Image 1 (cartoon, rainbow, N blue to C red):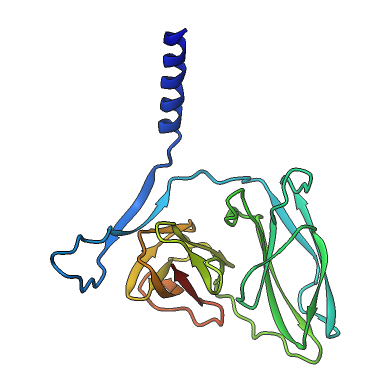
Image 2: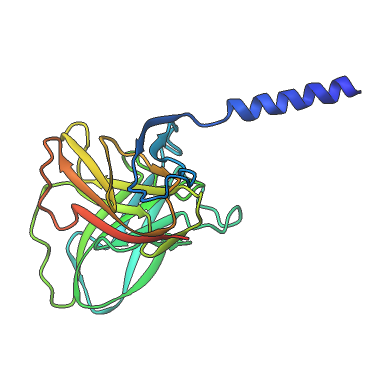
Length: 255
């Protein structure tokens, strides 16, 4: 019996080890410490991604309402989506699976693909997307959709064929416990990072990191403090794009 228990324990340990995610594109960054030389050094701050496989690659999100540049009266504006090849079932989970970002703001989650939002007069760009079990945006073609519309007497956004950013994480004033990973999760909408020669530059106060593909960026060992996270969409030569949503800034707190 003891041999059987030992064997089962070894199998469990081996399975746990083999299921650990592999880190890729890891970079160690230096912090201005200002510490007493006799004090122990702080853990190294690292930027990295996990070698993940895309969840629900065949999921499709379609937007029926609003139509492109449709005009609504101020007040309750209807949104209607159609979701395919994705477990959009409230009996299994109470987590939001559908998120909307309006004009580069914080994401709002919804339990139903049909809902209304109370909106004032103005021009709006909605980016809608599905998320996985961790709450990270699905990033395959068809997993997300965007649309411009107007509320009240407002002009459409000037036409632009340039890609732009939608930031899922972090959220404004999001708080993290020391030792918890800070996740930068973004979508590049209206373009392909490889084909269009794009990269995303991430600044966290004085810390910097760049990535040339859509993947959640994780930050480990960020010390307690207040931080401004800036995410910018750039050409491969470092030139920033001109669109109004080519950069996003969020303030976060580690404490």
